[in-house]
Image (cartoon, protein in one colour):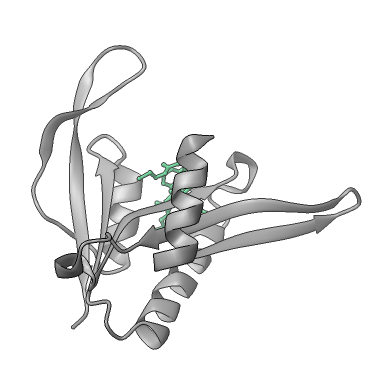
Length: 134
Ligand SMILES: CC(C)(COP(=O)(O)OP(=O)(O)OC[C@H]1O[C@@H](n2cnc3c(N)ncnc32)[C@H](O)[C@@H]1OP(=O)(O)O)[C@@H](O)C(=O)NCCC(=O)NCCS
């Protein structure tokens, strides 16, 4: 809960975030979310970091993630001209996600070795990626 409160506060005060909402018989439901925010330090004010996207499992693979991410990038490009660098991290084993981000203009910038602790106790690299405004 603290994690959610932290990123909601950061995204609403110094970042960008969107949700995708589905209407159904029982009301509206958030089915996907994307956010990123600028660090509070001046020298990083042109950066959006910790970009995170999640799509509800039953809608994964249906094109929603790509549409939401493209909307996010368009909004940053058009409405936040001072943002010239967007950063994210992805696990090395999440090859589909890595390819997805590369298809959206992100490039791999190395590896944080053994940064991620998996639920089975193993460690794996976290891959930093960035998209620079060209
Ligand atoms: C990664 C994720 C945001 C993509 O959203 P999505 O709506 O499923 O993706 P789309 O249907 O728009 O497809 C976009 C790309 O995502 C990739 N993708 C699809 N399902 C995925 C899944 N379950 N996990 C990882 N990547 C997936 C595909 O390679 C696809 O590429 P393509 O367009 O060349 O086929 C979403 O699947 C998700 O939330 N996955 C679980 C959590 C996760 O892996 N998050 C990334 C952590 S860095």
